[in-house]
Image (cartoon, rainbow over all chains, first blue to last red; front, side, top):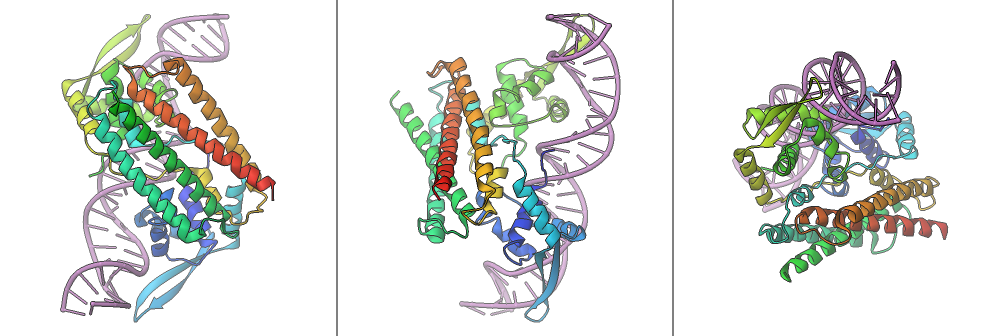
Length: 181
Length: 181
DNA sequence: GCAGGCATGTAAAATGTTACATGATTCG
DNA sequence: CGAATCATGTAACATTTTACATGCCTGC
């Protein structure tokens, strides 16, 4: 009975904090949530409609300027219930971490394969950049200590920083190991 | 131009090592590759057909026992080319790590939320089990030193062990932090 | 006035999951 | 001889990505 449709709960979760438009939700995937989930606006708008049909959210219309209409969505009691039920129920499945680079690595057999060094170096740069970005986020949002009102966000940032640190260390050591051959 | 259809390359990669049936490929996702990718047989069989139509693989029929037919697939030169082209080209995108537990955590705000401890403990058990499993794999496949003919596999196992070690450490420390409140 | 961002949607295609469906072989 | 595993497929559905499509607002 693995819970599918996680996007539904992301939307409910975001709306449980603030009244938001589809556009706002789309943007959330470019920043905060983008660290650990992705979605496009073409997926979000239809889902917002469906959630409203199911009475988990409602919206009110706002006019910006002369006539630009915004739909500001908010969560209903029923939506809040479903959100908390989802959070409370077990999360038993460890879904495979789909990392294309790791996949490629799997098919490299020889220690002296010439493709190894450039591949590892490329990934090291990517993960270093991500780590820097995460550390900046941590600094700007929590000034290095947990905010008692956003504990979960603090924890996942801490976790992501720890993960990227481990990833870059592993890459660095592996590259060094190659060089000494 | 992000390369999609990674399953295609997993199949090509597996077939570049051995002649395999669809059933064998399906099983590979329960063991080795299962650590970092997933796929069902209902996705594999149609894709095998499509890859054969595109002349990247071929098959020969084998009879097991009296009449059970097996299709043993092998890679063609063209398939080998595409595989190596994929491995050689850059892997620039860092896709978001979709972890449902992390998602739930994001929507927990208070440090004293009663759901935190059971959630973290559940995940700790899952990741400890995974770590144990990975360590056993490492032992049985590489007896703690890299096999010069499966270097990539060694590296990704090493990476996965490092990742799960970090994950369990973070969970353990977070649980301890809760207890001291 | 125009470029970039705000704002909302639909369509088509690809990808992935769950369920349905069938039959053979091996081992106990 | 029956259960587990080998072996291959299709159908229906859900999810995700890419492209198409439109129009307003703000700041320069």
